[in-house]
Amino acid sequence: MIRKISQSNANYLKMNILYLLLIISNVVLLVGLILYYWQAGVSVHLETYDYFSTVIPTIIILGFITSRLAKLRERGSSLYEMAYLIIITILGLITSYFSGKSNTAVIFGPYLEMFRILCVILIFILMATSLSQFKEIMQGKLSRKNLLVCFIVFLLLALYASRFHIRVNGAPANVRCMVVMLSGLFGGPVVGIPVGIIAGAYRFTLGGVTAVPCAVSTVISGIVGSLVFWWSGKKYPRPFAAVVLMFLFTGFEMLMVVFATPSDISFQYVRDIYPLMLFSSVIGVILFSIVVNDKLQDMESEDVEDVVDELAEEVGQSEEIQELRDEIGWLKKEIRELRGDDE
Image: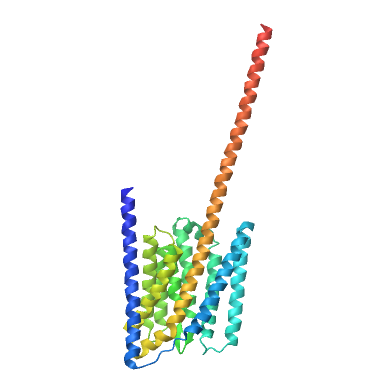
């Protein structure tokens, strides 16, 4: 028992050190951006109001979906999952329509397009979590077959996220690192590290001035997600921890771009895509965490129902045994009485 407690404390300390390093990297990135634009005498307009006009409605939509779908849980998990799938599909179609109607040079257009890509990925993730292999992984059954299926699914999604990206002022933005991070957080090092290596190698083959830092950060995201999975007791971490991790790692990824590319390219690149990638990655982790929590709650309720059924069956059997004993006792009494009459 003492050994388990000490191991848990050690893992907690390691995770805190990891978060501290990521926080430092984000601070260094922020300070570097401020110093660069201050020395260059460039006035940076981040269109804060436009960002909030995108983020706040999205959060409201997500909150509405979560609160409404929770009520369907009482009517059965299959109806719940179907409704989730339909609503995400509708959101994807709506964002695709408005993205086509809006001017992509406007800040709202790229967010809509990135959210559409997110919807496609989440649809596949939702369908994948219905597989028995994914459910067993969530229950802690890390068999070779389960991990292989998980690896294939996340690898395909990571390649999709690399291939289908959007460009903001010529800079490509995608959610590849988010998918690789989730593969490590969900399946551990056996899934996250190879997915990160293959996805990173594929990103490198696509070329570009940021090919090296983006490829390296993809590999690191798989390693970081796997470490957090291991330190969390070989299970998906708490949603808040996963969201904060993705938030900080996005800043770390941008810092790698700054260090690995010329300043006249890197700072422009970060300025254009950092808010968009931060938005999409955090929203993606939030939605994935919702799906995982829902699945875990469904499985826990099913386990409770199974236990109740077993107890009811045992109680029923004990009642039947008691009735048989009463009948046997009554028969014995009748036999004794008959024997007494004969005597």
